[in-house]
Length: 389
Image (cartoon, helix red, strand yellow):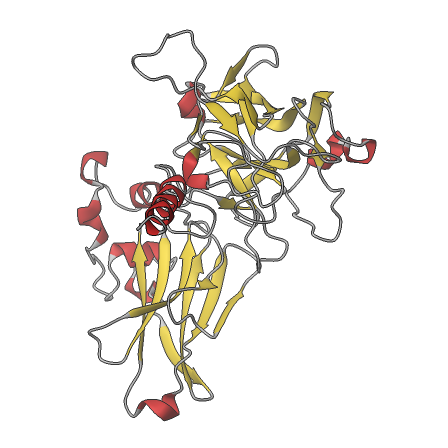
């Protein structure tokens, strides 16, 4: 008994500290707000910089503010393609056109994290004149110091901080940015975005204050991998201007309905009678009032494996596309998924053996191959596309 009791207590502590927080999960997981660098919703990137103040623990080769301009690259072969801020360093970026508050996220900040757990964080501030800045509200629920070796930071414990998202192993050349909505700071448009490194030893604080706290007291301490050197602090890859395209935008352009009835009841209607309800017309980039435009998913085979082919609109960042397989039309198993405009990827307990996307623009032709061998099943195989928003 004396041996088992401590073991049980240690297990309980480990489970407690590993619990997920209340915020969106890392890139690639359902509900994540991460935005892929390849998402066609990006309409522009930072074009200029000012006030680069490098902090400590960063060598000169990484002190290149010009590397923060233009599109995010996540170049695994050239690690110098970032501007490292250093501990407590900062930089202000400018844009060819003002960033305007629209429906949804307005810009995204990219750090060069190559996975979803080694997360180096920064404050984000914006200004409409380059002089007066306002900081985005933030929250950090990470409970204690994060060592550099074996660093693990859970995105679900972070909100309102740049660096919350990184890349996904296996998606070469694709990184994920942390999105920001100007509505959160009450501004209609801005011309400057300032990034300020957070030293992850707890000396920096978020903006959360408990109701019983001193209203002038700092929030909770923020922890991220510390200490770091050579490329110490936040490694800024890019800041992109993002325009959210939503179901409401699409519906308003096609139906003479007032906003008050543009709700979920519209999703399941089929006004042109082509067998595709409005939500699927939106997802497959067809017209809800033109039956001739219908583009339904098609079935096929590759060798002894069933396939499904369909169109995916990468502009539709408010959608999740899920491909499922079944042998009896009753029990369905997920084999591939695309979330918020990200590429379709194998997923689920028995992932697809093949997923391809063809198309250089926003419209992608998807082919998903089921892993079950038709020759061994002794019966039919069914595939379907399920869309949610």
